[in-house]
Image (cartoon, rainbow, N blue to C red):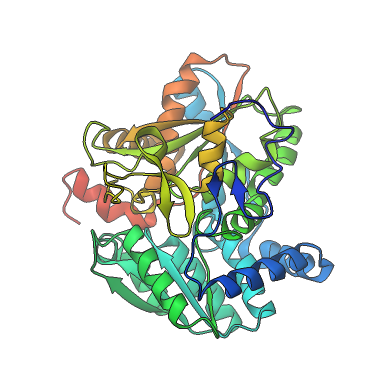
Length: 405
């Protein structure tokens, strides 16, 4: 594919939901009318001052936005290079960036007259955020979660139950995020009349990658103003973890046309890219179709989707959002893998030098910061999205480090 630069990296998708050759809507005929209804409702909502005002009110008074942009002085001193700032979206209500998207989508569900909410979740953060907004707006909620993730993310499972959600453990496949999304799509096809599916990442059939990106772009839009106030200029580098890719595209998108800013997406390298025990779809995958969109996927020579692995349940997905695939092909964003062991090292370092316990997802991004910051000048600036807090991961980390909890 050509790497000729488009007029704007922020222009996509096209009317059919394509970012170059990626994206689109590969869905069952039963779902197509609902997808078109959702697209219509979303484009109307984008132009509706009342919708935007209500979402902004909820972001401010319910979620706690704007989240702080924090100068990590201890980490900067420890690494000895570029100044490091964290966009602290882990301080949002529910503990991650997921609430940004869920608040937008629950308003769309209400606008469309839907009375039942479903979602998929891996690490449980999207499930918690969905259960939270469903409780606030008085909707019944069903969350599909892989059986493997139910076991390793038990604190979030209990949180969802407290919020009134029904948790459906998914036993097919490896019992992780891919399998949960499969089951959620089956539910949606069966219950199209009354059900709204709140997809948790910037993937799936159009218009989901676009609308999730737009709701999450509040992250990058805030960073622009905050870093100008703190430093009087834009950063030299942006770094974020990428599973499906919603926190990353939310940070990246408002900066994509800033040619002097280097942008880095960090994938789950698992146990290494030599085998199948990783989830680095861009670094080690190839294009294919999954969950309604064409994107980079982990697949074998016959096109069968591989299970993959990551210590992080939220990155344990064998694909990536289509806009990320396009940005990779266009040469605008660098995508790199980080191994489980590197993420664990970063997790522990942040605890010790900043007093912040991060989720395992942004710990991957932090591991890349640890590699890059020492090689940069002290007058240079990195902004990393600290997209989730680590309460949910203490059992997983404890087990990996040999502690009995």
